[in-house]
Amino acid sequence: MTDKSLIDLSWDDFDEHRDPRPDTNDFDAVVDKAISRRGFLGGAVAFGSGAAVFGTGLFHATGSAQAAGHAAFAFDPIDVATDFDVHVPAGYKSEVLVRWGDALWSDADGAYSAETGVSVDMSDKVFGENTDGMELFEVDGREVIAVNSEYVNPKINLPAASEGKPQNADEVKLLKNLQGVTVMEVARGDAGYAVVKDSPFNRRITHETEMVLAGPLAGHDLVKTKADPSGTQVKGTMNNCGSGRTLWNTYLTCEENFNGYFGATGEEPAGEGYKRYGIGGEGRYAYEKFDPRYDISTEPNEPHRHGFITEIDPTDPTSTPIKRTALGRFKHENASMAHALDGRVVVYMGDDERGEYLYRYVSNGTWQEGGATEGLLDDGQLYVAKFNDDMTGEWLALTPEATSMTEAEILCFTRMAASAVGGTTMDRPEWVATNPLKAEAYCALTNNKNRGVKPNAGGDDTSVNAVNPRETNHYGQIVRWTPENGNHAAIDFTWDLYVMAGNPTVYDNEYAGSQNVNAGNMFNSPDGMVFSSDGMLWIQTDGNYKNEGDFEGMGNNQMLVGNPETGEIARFMTVPYGAEVTGLCWSLDKKVAFVGVQHPGGSWPDGEGKPRSSVVQVWREDGATFG
Ligand code: FEO
Ligand code: CA
Ligand code: CA
Image (cartoon, rainbow, N blue to C red):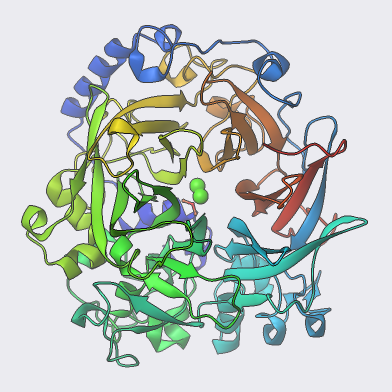
């Protein structure tokens, strides 16, 4: 594979490039198990009733989008779209709030040009590219959004002659600055919400921002570098994917495909950890050629300082972001915090790679409203989820005794610790969401073409099992679990599948999906998930939008609403062809939803020139609230 083609891969396929599937496999055992699993499921018709795995049994297949949502939702569900626009239900409106390249400070006005994109010298003063997770915060009645810019598309940002690879340090700087996190004040005016230019809260946090490494791994030899012999001062947060917020209202940004930023210009360092995390060879953006910090031949520990959850105080623009090593190092998708009955703080987290794991952190200390937060994200226990086929499950503690690893090794090589204790390999855990109305949590398992086909990067078995029941899973499913006694800190839980995505117009077997999927609401690859305050589950997709073959009838990526009690799911929004929809938060009065539209196609939203990743605002014309 050449330099040029690396950049054309999705992050998921980038993993595959690093860890290709073998030419030949002994699939017999895998296939046998998959077939017996099919027998247990009994085909799509039985999903809601015969197989308790698939939810409450209350789901009703219906023939149209309208019928699917009519009873339970405050909107008429919309049809699929295949065009280059955003669509919302009748009675709702949508407008762009902010686009890649829009100035956050007035001295950056004009930083973006339709022909050349963003200029290097203004690149840390504009809204970054490829918006992702976000949260809205209140500061003395003002509204401040913290929002991730996950990655960049160099073919859009760099001159065509570069063919998608930076050719000098300035071009690397441009790419670094357009990723990370944006903190921005927003305010409502006559034309809806707008970014408050020059607000004292506005801030860009990039791959170069100074931050602190905290928790048990801080200061360890594994995280010391030439530039930071203390192992506590880190530059940058990268590949900021999904989001979370603490009970004390700080922002959690989650470092996902951090591995792709590092490369080797010479000899590669030895160690299982590099392979398990997909670190080696060429970096995706050639950073290592122009910045030695990203060159693992000379700085083998720099990658050990990324892949964490980073806490940011969006109310204080001078605050130093803190990387929380106690929450483990992996491809963090997002974070959902819950308050255990005994006051401890619980964080649910997915590791988005094929056959990786679902995790939970439980603090040792307790929190109460207005109380101290010191140590709550530095001192606690990390667990990996084990899902049993009888719909029970347990959290396996990642301790030195259980893993034969030191505490520092567990936090630096968390995937290897999870493998050591026998967690359940999952179909790419994306967002986790905790129901605000009852003690239950959900995880979107987006898809996994390798389920039942090949092991994960650590060699762990990925045969089908009850929670990941389909081999070569192109559609994905959402699992939910209820902790014992309603206590998120409990070891035991029970689980079911809230939905199995599928295509009932193409298949009449398990690939048709569960009974709450029908021709009117079907989708693939659930990814973002956020609960509104009324206990409705908003589901965002990042899947195949070609609308053909297995995906015919699904159209562009979309946002749906799920009712956890009835299982009903209805389509609320579709995004332009090519885009995924990711990131969701609401205005303080809940009248406006802010929704992220990442990597759109065509020339959306400007109608000419480059496509621009954007946050859009959606509201109901009669002024009703969301949730
Ligand atoms: Fe950045 Fe797994 O999504
Ligand atoms: Ca995602
Ligand atoms: Ca995804």
